[in-house]
Structures are given as structure tokens and as C-alpha cells.
Length: 187
Image 1: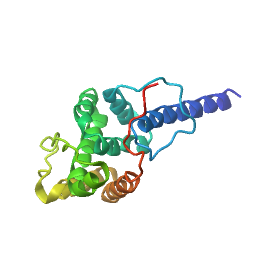
Image 2 (image 1 turned 90 degrees about the vertical axis):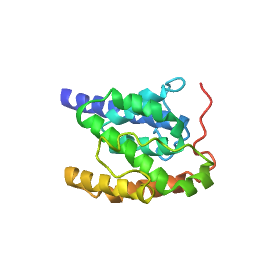
Image 3 (image 1 turned 90 degrees about the horizontal axis):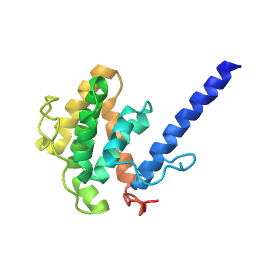
Image 4 (image 1 turned 30 degrees about the vertical axis):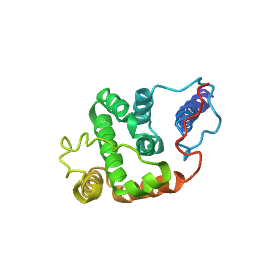
């Protein structure tokens, strides 16, 4: 009986985690992932805390949600970097890679992003040198993203290039929605 209660409690905690973070993403206008139920968390979590919580999530969809958040709100780059500074080990490495992936994708799709969201500042080339990747201006970010994907595929054993391309396609399709990227009013 205790085992079932423990399982129910764990599932409830996972669902609450998902709902809290997707609610926060939705409040930033990132609406590709929806909560099962909007949480009662008042207001918005500070951007650096949101980036950190997404990076620490066990759910890959939430971890990857930092990419459309950065593409939509590049002015939050310093908040993302502050969150990365608080991480260590493999979490830090993955977060740095997602930062570079977003910067590379932004350069690859800059015209389409500008057409859909208006002109936005470029994400800084942070972590490119630390990860020994090609410069982001080489091939409009494609060279860096390909090198990053090859490294990650060798490290993690799955088609990271396909994942990044799918994520960029999803972002470009979703960001056409009129409500995409519009921050919700504070509660």
C-alpha cells in the first residue's frame, strides 16, 4: 500500500513540476507546451530562476524549452547565463550547449524570425570558445550547430541534429501564432 501511495505522490510531484514550468513558459508567451492545469503560482518566476529550473528538470521537453524561450526573448541572455553560472557538471555542460544551439538557430533562421517576431537582438556567442565550436558567423550558425550536434550524438547516442532541426521547425511554426511571445500580465 505504501508503494502505491509513494508512486501516486511521485506522479503528482512530476505533474506539479510540469504544470508550474509550462505555466511560467506560457506567461512568457512560449505556448508550445501547455500545463494540464494552470498553477496557482502568483506572478512570474525571475527569468534566471526559470532558466535554472528548466535546466534542472528531468523532462527533456522542459530542458529544451530554453531554446524557444531564448529565440523569442534574446534580451534574457544575461539571465540565462546567470542560471548557467549556478549549474555544475553535466547540467552546466548541457545548458551551455543549449545556449549555443539557440544562438546558432537564431542565426540560421534570422530572417524568418524577424518576419514573425520583428527585429530582435542577436544572442551573444557565449560558450562557443569554451566548447571549441566554429564561430557563429560561419555558415550563419550552421557550422557551429552541426559540430555541436555531432559532439552530442557521439556523447549521448541519438540524432541530435534531427532534434535541433525539429525544434527549430516547431519554433518557426508555433511562433506564427498571434499570441506567441507576448508576456502575460502579472497576476
